[in-house]
Length: 437
Image (cartoon, rainbow, N blue to C red; front, side, top):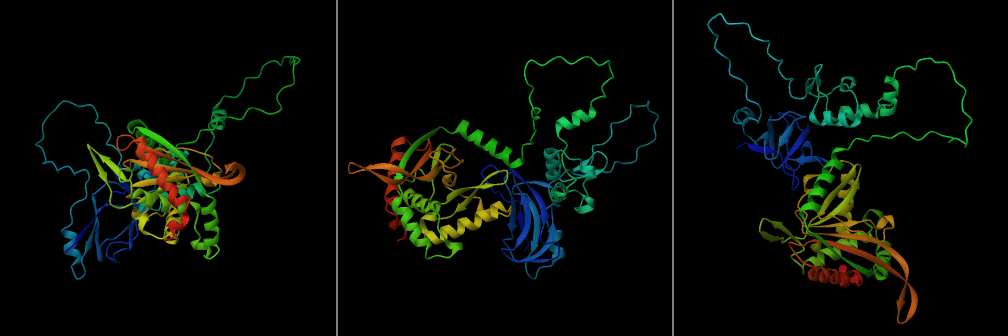
C-alpha cells in the first residue's frame, strides 16, 4: 500500500515550511532513513528523512513552494507495488482550484465595458516575468538585490534560494548603500559665484562622520525576536541564582580528557547537562509544559542546548540525557551543533526538548539570565568558571566558582521549588564523580 509523506511540524510554533529541493526524484528508490528532501523553516534548513522503503511515485509539491504543516508532499509506493497505481491514487496537493471552462455564450449586444484589470502574476512570478521562490524573494528583499540579474536554476528557470546565495557570493553582487544611492540620484549642483571662506574659529574634524548603515533583518533573527517577545510578554518569569564550587569538576575534567581522543573530549557544559538531567528527575514540575489549564510532566528528560549559528540561535536536543554517559552526551551535542552551524540539522535534532540550557561561559560572563523557550517551563543560564578569592576556614584562598541562573514559569512552579533544584545541582556539580557512575 502506498504511503503519504507530509510536511513535518518541526517546532512548537511552526505553521508552514518551504520545500527547498527534492533530493530523491520521482521513480527513484528510497530507503527508510534516507534524506528525501530539504525544507526551510523560520529557523533552519532541515533534511527530511523518509520513514518508508519503496519508490517515489509522485511529488505532490514542486520545489520552492511554501507548504502548511501536515500537508501531503509526496507518495511512496511500497516495494512491489505499481508506481502508476500509487501515483494515480495520490491525494491532490492543496492549491488554487482551476476555474471551470465556461460555456460559449450566445452572441448578444451589450454596452461597452471598462477594460478588466490585468490578471495577477503567477505565484512566485515577479513583474517582468521573473519567477522566484518565496525564500528567494525574501532574501532579495533583505539584501536589496534585483532578481532580474540573478540566473535561475530551478524548474523552468525559477530562481531558488541557492541562486541568490551564489549571486551574493559573486564579487560584483554588492548592495548599494543608501547614502551612495541617494548621492547618485541627487542633481548636480548649480554653479554659483564663489564666496570667500570664513576663517574657522576652531580646527575642523579631520574625517567625516560615518554614514548610517541599514542592515536588513534576517528571517532567523526575526523569528527569534517574535518568539522571545511572545515568551517574555505571556510567560511570567522569575529567577533564582546560585554559585557553585567547580574546582573538583575542572580537575576531574582535566583527568578524563587526558584519556580521551579529541573528538570525544568533554566540556564543562557536558558536565552541566548531565547534572541538570539527573537533578530534574527530582523536580518534575521543572521538566514540564503548560498546556491550557493542565501541567504536562514529561517522562523523558530531553535537554535543549542553545547553539550560536549565523544570524541567531538554534536549540539542539540531547534526548534522555539522564540515561546517557558523559562521553555520549559530549559526542551527540558536538555532532548536532556542527550540523546546526552547517545548516544541515535534522528534524529530530531540534524538536522535543523539555528543558533548556544556555551557556555563555566561553565568553567570560559572570552572570546572565535567559528567556524561557515555550512550551518549556524553565531554562538554565550558565556563566563562566572564574578563579576568585574565597574564604575557607577563616582563610582567604584561591577558588573556582561558577554562577547559574534558572528562569522559571511562575504558572508552573514557584521560588522555593526552583531554589531546591539549584541546591540539588550542587550534589552533582561539586561532587562530579557522581556523574560518572
